[in-house]
Image (tube, rainbow, N blue to C red):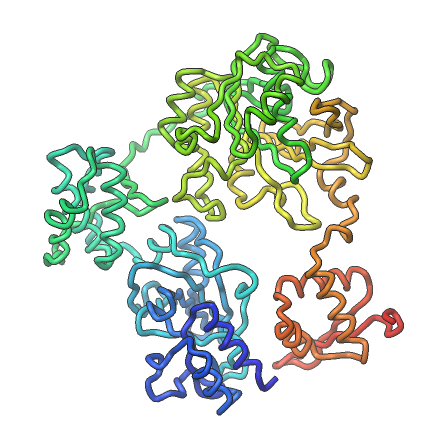
Length: 610
């Protein structure tokens, strides 16, 4: 459609990305100043595309677009170049880059868009088939047309997610491969930097980061983080400005690198390890201990996840009551037998419910021995220092030695520098709990909200991160059945044996009442629910739009998509609505031709809508 490119250009500008016109079906600028003319000014953008509606769209990278940096993966079978495979190989060694806007280029390559506070320069051939577009550069944006006639497309773009802020793994990738001359004896990075060594160590760190190609702004940010984390006491701002930052002006070309990687907001030393390994005939073999037989292994992490209103808080209160009293009172006497019935200590931290109005009452009603249950109220200033990897948490575990420690919900105890959606971030965040479990005899229960997606179950219902599922030795999903007042606990994962039967229960006067077992799992309960009543209004509106649009006969899918975009229906919502209507047998689609292939859609029967 004539105005499609202009509407996309205006949308990019509204999101803070500076745009400028490119020649029709070309990658060359149509403006005299090239990408220097890029702007977010609506009137200028409208003037450009009113003059020529078929101009392609260029997005300027760098500071003009809020620190935009783009990883350009070139794919050229004739030349034997495949930047996408190079990235996959790098990720196998270093972990996945975080999800972000990703476009498919006209030649089948990819653009990965990130935001970075540091300045990134354009770099060609950073890896084989991989370029970087930074300050003074630009990319061709969808839905522009490549000279070969193919359209640039979003694999994941506006409406799907935000442009991700570059984390430590993206920064490491942007640095490029380590030159061979860097493979020298490593600088032994201390865990703490005492007074008297702070300035010299910080200056050595400057040298190492200069050797890696970081600019001064990025180096300063790293030094601030390392100073706060390791220097005892930290250098003041005045001391850093006077004694450390002047070293940024030195000529560091001959500097041997500081052998560390920037990971999770801090620098991690790469150690040289012994190559000795243990043979399995000498390895120790243990049988698992159970806090609750088959359902909760001792000294490990168990996840309890579920929708709001599924009774998660009452469940863990009943569990805490049973452990604290040494009774079989977890739901009913003969429901889930304990290995030991001696009263044990319980520690919990709740960021959603108060002692006074909710938790003490529920614990008491479920039979808790209250003197065996310990916590810190959310109103206490110390609560903010309780994080999964904090020294304060370990000090509390060491002092009280609880048999069970509960965190509700998980988000409240994740350090602020950890992004739950980043691959492997949550694994490193939660890993200290495993060590604490063996050291202090503690089993951990982490409470999570299930995500809001319809038609998913089990692993996909754990909110925010697959790492949570992976590091948990047992996972239990809580939910509601179609029977009025009956809820379920579905045992979805067990690393130490088969999963247990699902538990049915009700909550009566804030007390768990056991209602039996079933072999149904979370998937069975989820798929039984009438999701039509739960669907978001936006999807229902999108379905109505599609049916109305097709009532006069078959239409080209691209035309439907364009109209949906004009009506502010997101790509994801539109896709789900199409899928629903296909599954309901109301629409059908087919393709015509080849290079270019065109897709069409129509109602299955025109009389299906009034």
